Length: 158
Image (tube, rainbow, N blue to C red; front, top):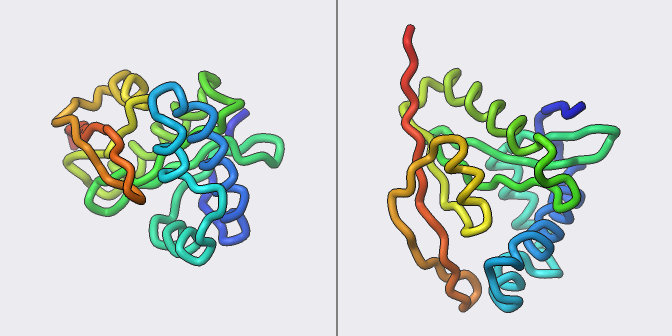
C-alpha cells in the first residue's frame, strides 16, 4: 500500500537517486543521452538539490520504507517536480501523488494547477485532464529539451 508523507531533509539523497534513475531509465524513450545527462547529471550539486527540495516541500509516496515517488505543488499551482520510481511505473504511485496534490490544491483554494511536462509524462497528465497550452523548448546545461506547458482548471462547488 502506498502512503503519502511530507519530505524530510534526510530524504534528499534517496530522492535524487530516484530522480536520476527515473530520468535515465524511463525518459530515455524520448530524449537523447546528452539531454538526459543535462537534465539529471550523475553528480548532483547537493547543496542546490537540498535547497530546491526544502523550498518545494514535496510529498513522498512510499511503501515498505522505500520512496516510490515524489511531487510538489507550489502556492501558485505549479507542479515543479513529479517523478515515480522507474521500477514502480504503472502501479498507482503517480495516481496517489496526483490525488494528494489535488487535495492540497483544494486546501489552497487554487483555481488551476500547471506543470512543464516531459514528452514521457504527457500521457499521464492528459489522463488527469491537464490540457496542453503549448509545446516549448527549454535549455538545460546547453541542451535543448522539448516539454509541454500543461494546465488543469480547478472548479470547486462550496
